[in-house]
Image 1 (cartoon, rainbow, N blue to C red):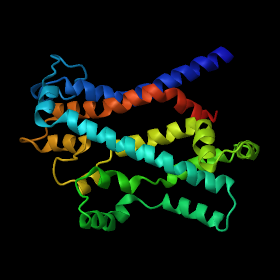
Image 2 (cartoon, rainbow, N blue to C red):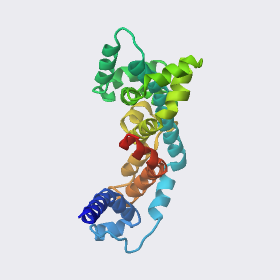
Image 3 (tube, rainbow, N blue to C red):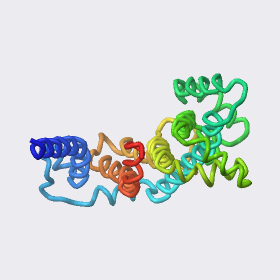
Image 4 (cartoon, rainbow, N blue to C red):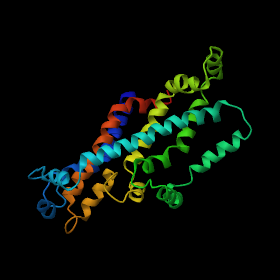
Length: 269
């Protein structure tokens, strides 16, 4: 019975993985087809004459390397800033005692309900008046503070014993040392998860870079991929799919590198 349950769980996991991977496999297969083959056999999964011509056209149409670098730098800076600011904020809400602590926590939770689209007009006007449009500052600064990150860090710190912090203080450690050198490593799985959530969200973000960029100076890769649909007549699906393969590949590699930390965070270890 135990072995049957194990095989059932394995088959169920394989089925879910297949469903999850199927769209990516279809995207990859379509990128290897020609437009003529897509039109003639739209439901065919395996390319009859695989070709990399679509990828060559993507690199010819947009500066993929430059836009990918801008996107990775932007998403990484946002994620690192969110971690750096969420640690002391979560520490204050979890371990310090001050007037209005509960109110501050409620306000953090309330911020989770406010999407960025609600506040983009005043934020855009602020950056426009300061001449920061089309700069990395405009892409990164509005998201440097994360209510979700503060909440996750606060919840993780609730399980850390106060005696550990008191012992560090008795040894002469400052609050900065306690937060970043003692508690930071303890919360590594949580911080890795926060980095992944933030990185993936802002790496794929289309709305904010579209609002804050009017030329190619800091154009991100999602914007460049979207422009592929507007070139020529009709939608050249093989080129669009090739662009999306290039867009999603770095994120898949990142997940593969940090999957162990992510599993630990989900398991609560």
